[in-house]
Structure formats: structure tokens, C-alpha cells
Length: 171
Ligand code: OFO
Image (cartoon, rainbow, N blue to C red; front, side, top):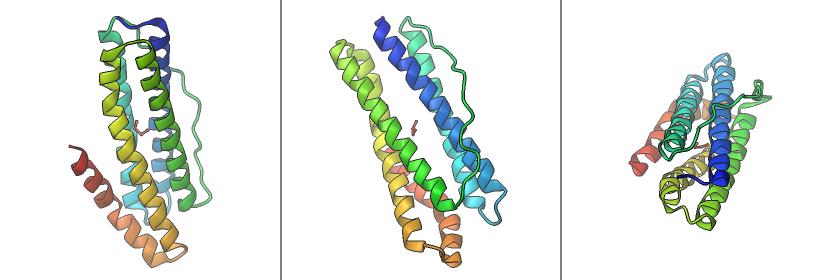
């Protein structure tokens, strides 16, 4: 059975994962109306779906452990960006925030002596290592490319490859 503080903290994480899904959906939609960013568009639609899966996993876990998972109300995310670089900076910032939140949850699970939740959260800990790494790698690549159109073309062409390489390592 989940303690009240643990249940509340997990529900906050449900909200954060839902917000991540919305934020990446907005990035996908923005990218889709820019010329030539098919790869980036695909990348963020996929990220958005993945965040929804993270949210669902939490919802199922909370309910399974005798809690009540609350489906959250969501704010509108950022919907327009001044540049592609800005999108990826936001992406990294967001992932760092999620990692911090997961760390807090792990800390709470230990102080509540809730080892089942602690065990469950390890999957998120590993996921965040990969996601942060991916976000940093993509930011580094964009930094190298600068304003070079050819470089942006290649970045867009290869972005799903970078993502899938990370996925393979994880599974
Ligand atoms: Fe939910 O994995 Fe990133 O945010």
C-alpha cells in the first residue's frame, strides 16, 4: 500500500510526464510547419508518445498499489520557438527537470521505506540517464552545425538514427 506522501509525489510525476508529452507534441507541431524538418517532427511525435507511455506506467502502478492515480489538468505548453536550437535547449532543460523530480521520488521512497516503489523507479532512473544523454548529444551537434544549412539538413536526416541508437542500448 502506498503512503499518502508517496501517492501524492507519484501523482505529481504523472502530471510531469503528461506535461512532457504535451510539450513535445507542441515541438512536433511547430517543427512540422517549418520547411524540411521531417526528421525533427518525427522525433518529437515519437518522444511525445513515449512520455505518454511513462505516464501510463505510473498510473497503472499507483492504482495497482492501492492508491488512486489522478488524471491531471494540463497547462498549454510553449507552442512557438525562435529557432531549432531553442527547441532543443528547451528539450534538454525539460529532461533535466524530470531527472531531478525522479531523484526526489527515489529519495522519498527510501525515507518511506517503500522498497517496491524504489524498485519500480529504477526504470525511470535509467530512462532519464539515456534521455538526458540524448538531449545533450543533440544540443552539441546543433552547436557544431551553427547556421549551416547543410549541417541542419544532415541533423534532420539523422536524428532518428541517434535516437534509435540510444534505444538499442537501453533494451
Ligand atoms: Fe519521461 O522520460 Fe523524459 O521526460
